[in-house]
Image (tube, rainbow, N blue to C red; front, side, top):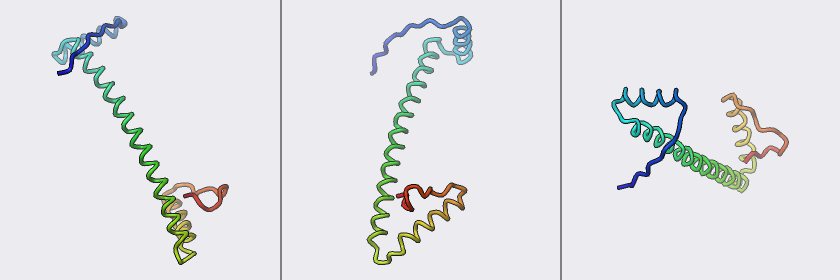
Length: 110
């Protein structure tokens, strides 16, 4: 079982009154009510960090997949297939209401 450590803090009177009222409404002690608030904030922060890591991993996988697909298209015997894919990509972006890739870096967005 986890050992709990007691923490103490000072809050403004209106906050203290709100905490006491909420704890009373939920039929809990002030200590339990505050603990639940702190634990909820802690879990939310952990979840945000996990989601950020997952998002970073998804971004890396997306980049890898696009580079791999571009390499496969470039090596395909039908040399027009790569351009056809890029054209279809631009059409799909437009249909979805997304902006087409800029011409600054060439036609390749992968």
